[in-house]
Image (cartoon, rainbow, N blue to C red; front, top):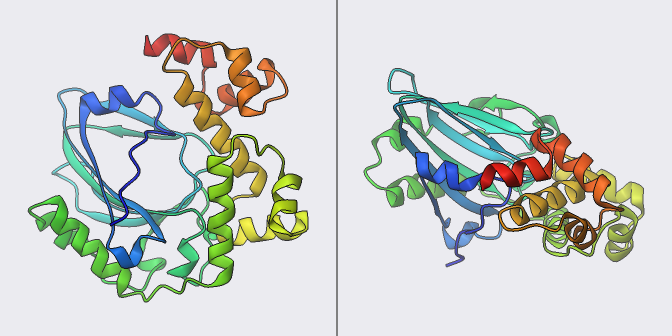
Length: 266
């Protein structure tokens, strides 16, 4: 079985998150492994409110949550975020989620993820499935909850066509190749015009190719900030024109400069 991703890329100050909540990831059924990154589960029981920030992956998430025990269970689909995503956790609650691989959501829905970008939409408006909230609330273990998600997604009979495969493959290339810095370079590697590449990313990922490249560069900078940092060297490694360019992009993404963020971790 494909193992769930174990890195904390995109989570701003992951150590603080893990001190406050129980955070787990599980792999989907084998039949879904090409399309689903992982299932993720968070539970908390807090004396004081805790706010978490995330520079999200360019991916759609199916989210079922109960913010506190006084709230009803809600199910929604969350599109790729354009900006820093923040959530304040209070009291006792939980979230159960599906993170689709970037580009994969179109296999489950005829709607383009571009319609969901920057939005959180009730599940019933997006996918023709029964609300899984009650079943997830009653699930005794993470494995049972994962089985609920497996059944729901397999019931949609996902269509893994060539456009879905291409979009996923190109995002994966951006994610893992730090030397890939320009949209024109990615288009050339894909054998597409820049215009066709941008259309593919918009229709199947939800944000443009340039935004995806920038998103993963910011992820890399956040990840590297956890140690002693030579920001000029980091800027060169991640393909920024200079250190000032890195500072501007990271500050715009997380609200503080890279140096201030690194100092806060220490």
